[in-house]
Length: 557
Image 1 (cartoon, rainbow, N blue to C red):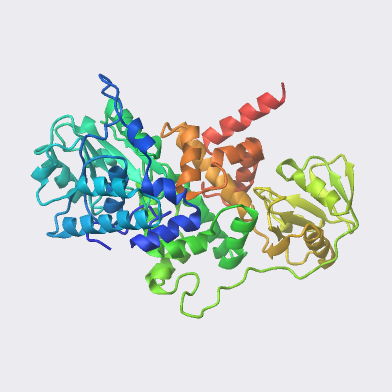
Image 2 (cartoon, rainbow, N blue to C red; image 1 turned 30 degrees about the vertical axis):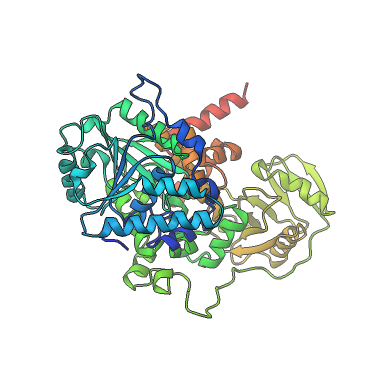
């Protein structure tokens, strides 16, 4: 890793080397390589600013400078270069900028070899790419993007020095993912022209850019930066300067809830990963993803957000992950994390229940809510379904009840055999269903529940009796933090959902997903979790509660 790149970058897609970064992006489902790597003529044309509009995009004839030539710096430079800009690369380490120019040239050559870039366009791009040995060579830049070490004093000094070189109309931008944009700009003479441009790693592949307005950022500057990113073929989202911005703030529960279920002994990492992948529709599970990111990176980002929010319990780090980091088991880069990456090592298999006989008939009592599509699937599988009034559950032949995870636990009903099943993003497409029940449940009831879902062609995992299970509590907490982010004016609901879909490839935006499940149902689940874990971690955010009330009011009309 370059000295100019910190390990405390955006944990969700960051890797330490370019090849690993591409692997991480492809693993979570980055957009098309062709569009992201090669850029388009249309993107360059879209960047031409209409005359007289100061908030328009920076035209492709204007120079873009990038300070810092590590993985992120090179990636950002490549994006600007293929969008048509003259690009200057600067690094404080002697010779590093020249090395970066050579590396970028080699990347363009590979794009030509793969047929993703025209040879003429490659020659023109290389002609626009230059290494700068002194900051003074960046004087005519219309935009300077910094991608150096994540140390506040170092960044502050860099921009103080840049202000002495560039014109007053130059837009200054930081790619920080963990520091305050406001604080970096605090000592500038013109802090209004300073903005955050948080690219995701690898920048040429991932479409999302968080455009972050600091306390002093002028609206015209933020708009110009936003439109420039659109001109580069990116999908920008606007957000205010807050710890973690959008993605690194809202994504915390994806890791935290999985770790909490593991710490409570309800399921092992392989089973939790399988639940979120095969039932929840996420591209990777949290344990395999943090192994790919680096346990030290992921834990540091979590701790940074937690500390920045004054140790808010919603962001509490995991002791189990801390111990993993202390042991030096950092994931793929050390050969061991939650899983072993030694040559020949076999990945642990998720717990999968043995085959069981499916019941011939069931009774569906009331509305199953987001699990309603299961009724049609059961009927298609040849199971007789009777519908009766009730509280929203499936009645099994031996008297047991099969209930969608609601934040309660099976052990709370000692006189009733309750089996909970987890939320799925799409019950028809899900290849695994997760069940939970107390230890002393009637084994015949549990076998009926297992067989019922196996009759649909699903693999079934049975985990411990944990409130909210795995997918349901994760989605509820993601929606909770997303609603709070919107309610506090950090970003719009549309931008939050867009950021989470594109930044970390969630199957749906958290607020969109909560709307499908039902905001009131999500609030109720969190309320039940709050009763059982009275730390404040699961207390529903006011923004989510408002949505629940609005939903009820709409339904009552």
